[in-house]
Length: 165
Image 1 (tube, rainbow, N blue to C red):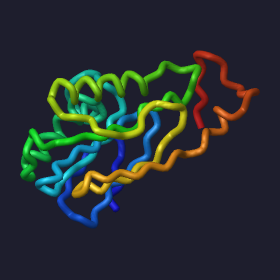
Image 2 (cartoon, rainbow, N blue to C red):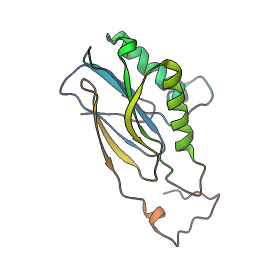
Image 3 (tube, helix red, strand yellow):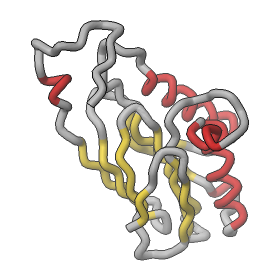
């Protein structure tokens, strides 16, 4: 089991390797080449932002380019790449919908790069735990329960405020 955090990516050819992450509004792109028997996953926080420094790893454009280049270096054939997208939830209704922006970026990126997105699970209002078997392109998701803040109609949070805990 390979845990993946925000701003990271991992590529594998191991038939027994599983990449795992937890997503809210973030996106995980799972890409693989079935003929080559390899794949990988990334996890990005925001669709775009300033370039340079370690923060760049959290942005979609950089994350997608790193993942594709790593796959190609490991022997993937670009026309054989397929994708599944996960995440992009809108967890806090009183905050901007970053999840939909992340999803729009990822779908547009794949379309421009000619990589078919053949599945996944995106949107909604719940976080996900994701497992991806990169050599097969198989994915499994578990929806996580809503947070206490979302469940409580008497939440102390008002629009425009942020609760830190």
